[in-house]
Image 1 (cartoon, helix red, strand yellow):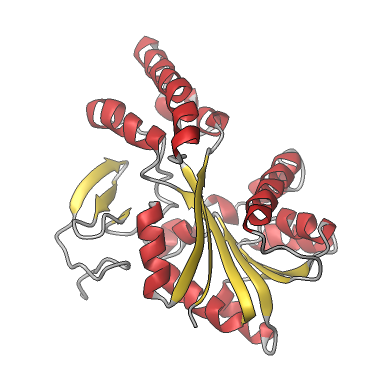
Image 2: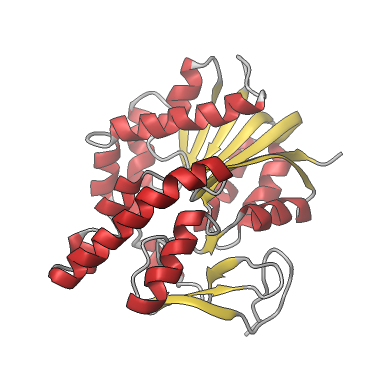
Length: 299
């Protein structure tokens, strides 16, 4: 069996264990500080993930549609702040989900194609008239022959991929001259994740931040920048922002996830207190718990 290396710096094991839950383990590279699952979950487990769930796909096109459009408009705001947006841009959205970003981009005068692994979700997007192709970027690449894009987006995608380097290399070959790659993903070095790790994860075993097992990597601004630079990208912008706290309340901190009882209610209250303190400070100091990255091909 080939020994696993860090995808950012090439460091070989051993890696320091950071957090473990339900048989899944996050480690930190001692050289570049990248956080990732080691060993990674098998493909059979990831096949059962939510993006393959027909019920989740139905929710994305129904009850969650307003939320997905709101998140997509936030992405538009991140891009506008960099000055790269203009009407007529040709875009490729990898991990397009139900197509919310394609809809919002079209409202802003852009046109494009989506790529989505979840078959039910991709089919739902096509029913809305969107060009969303089912599969991985590798799998749909033949259908993109001759296409070049001004903007290729990976919104909350790279952390899910077994090797994000591969998709970023493919993206580089699909960029038009002067084109950009944009991505969002959690920021493991954000103030709120760091505080809750120190206060709760090591003492109680509960940490709301990691989405195990579907998040295979947890980047910081430093490791995100190093990853892109190692693949011959120049990084134009790295900005942090806040994942809404109610996301955690409804997922990793929900009673269904961490249980009921007095101690669990006290634990949830503790996370809430930390959030009320950390979020405003993180906003002022640029240490939000999510991040936006924009890059272009070097040279």
